[in-house]
Image (tube, rainbow, N blue to C red; front, top):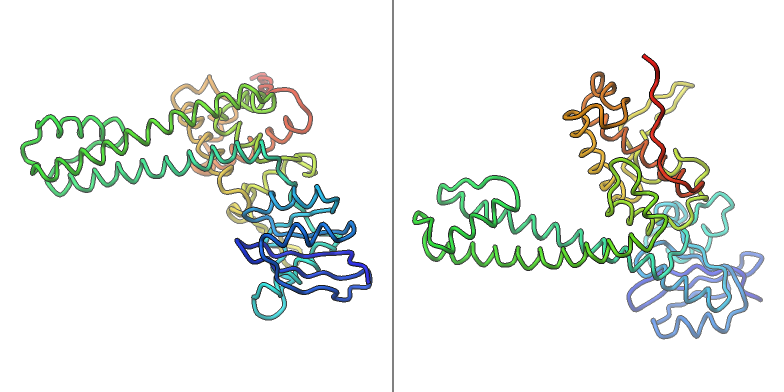
Length: 342
């Protein structure tokens, strides 16, 4: 019996394989160690291989594609309905094997190594920003115990730490001063690493034509543009800009019953990092719209008069996602809407 479809449940060291023939009969059901995966698939004739789009999935997809197999990645949420009974590695592999053959299944494009390298910069930068925020909050909390209120912002934290190290805060015990100074030194080290990463992102942005075109969208900076360019491999697989926005969780949930349709809040499903970047960028754009209404899309100030700020921010992020999809699929750069006659 010749194997036609294989489902593989990925892990760190033990991989579960479930293989069937053309009639759907189980041919192989076994666990493989990491070193056994490549030799096992090298002996198989060309077949359909399904995996969940999780950690290391893109690496293994590239390796198996080199061996001539047709590899398809699937979102784990779409595979879950095919799991029978309890959750085990064997059941997960069987569910993957069944799900990959469904004609209505949606697949995740395999990322190139260059894209994953750019995303590694983004993940590291995001981690360092969180660590920097934790350190600043720690300093603020420690000083509050001695009646010192620190203004919000990184600059104020570093300035106050410098005062402490110079001995200008007599109300703080020397031991606490040394602790705060040590935390401030950590913030400085993190800031140096962030500066290096941002230079790497800038260099990647300058080498990417797509990233430069995406950066022409108002509210989309270098960080958001490079993240979009590195994350979205095949934008044409989305039929419309709305479908792309839905993949980022920026479209409202639908509740339809008895012919009545009700729209709720946004789904928040999909790529959380891209969604957060777009919302943060639109938050900055909304602030500019309040200060200088003539410098932004005229629809924004009008919408702010009728809707809450947060609703307008998310709506602007939704629209920006659609514009980004249009640029990625059709080329060109952002064109500001023509002003309507009063």
